[in-house]
Image (cartoon, rainbow, N blue to C red; front, side, top):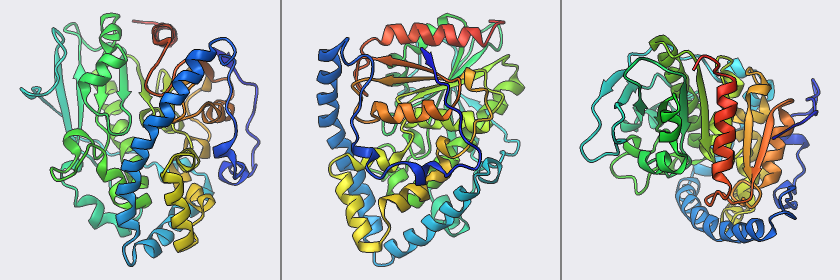
Amino acid sequence: MGKTALQPVKNSPPWWRSLPDDFYCQSDGTELDSEYPFKVYGTAAMDRMMRTGLSLVISGTLLPQLLKRDGMAREREWMDFYAKLAEQRDVDLVFLPPPKVDITEHKMSTFGYKPKDIPAVELRFESPFTPLNPDLNDSYLSYKRNRTARAQYWTHPTGPRPTLIFVHGVIESWYGFNSLFFSLRWFYDNGYDVVLMTQPFHGDRAERYHPFSGYGLFAGGFSQLNEGMLQAVTDLRVLVNYLYERGAPHVGISGLSLGGYLSSVMAVVEPRLAFCIPNSPLVAPVDTMRSWVPTGGVMDLIGKRTGLTPLELRRGLAIHSPLSYQPKLDPDRVMIIGGAGDRFTPPRFVRLLHAHWPESHLHWFPGNHIVHLGRAEYLKLMRRFMDSHCQDI
């Protein structure tokens, strides 16, 4: 792990203006490149192939909405709405605290994943979120299944423990995969309660006619993506409130990819977190996807049809970026994990987040976005980091 001495300058230009236009295609490099060249460059090549598949899915979902007769014009108008709010750089204006919400516990579905020999229930509650943009109220809230928030909760029979909230990445919302990939049982066996949150439009929150988990995030264009991110943060804050009210002595968060992004945003809005561990966080979605094929071409097409350039898209999506605000959580409680061979969320983006948060910690592993070589090492680092901020385990 390491620390950065960079300090954000007050009244400095926002990141969406100061970040170079060619940032998406700049070279990447970490201290692991020379130490593990085969692992880093080999896994990077794998990532480039896999991200093309995801890029095709996202592009194919976005385009129909944007190519509607009035879709592009409305998107430009709405992006300007979000951009003006982002320009104010007032986190409390954007991320409104959720009201008190009743959360109910339900038995796990017979066909759903349930960890063996661990008391687990599904938490459900009516998401209190309403779109920040009033023009999207009717269309966004028409997704009825998305309005019921869900999370799987692993508890200890002796009572509430320090709790790890885990947030999955885009599309991959199955509890079983995330439990196995991140060895969540190991954290449970070492004294932590665990909550696996389901993001908006994923899993059982997806409409029955949606072709894949997460489809709804992109099916309504960039504006719907904005509102989906804002809703995810609202629902996570509801869970944090619930866990503390239930008696959890500490609550922290981690997540992968888009889940890492949302974990980072939670550090911006939630000072009560004991720790925050973003893993391979997305950080700057527009710039990240400009290097993907064919998503980069789709963004160029949008720019030609509407004049909505990548810079303006960056500005429009900045409303929920952790780079747009100063964190309310002490940066010393943040540990960022990144893959040296990651080409979904390349190292330069991970460094961007690290530089934005003075005194945050950084750890590299010699793998890519999917193949986490050195995972056992960083899981041990995670646990030590978590333990250090949850002293009364």
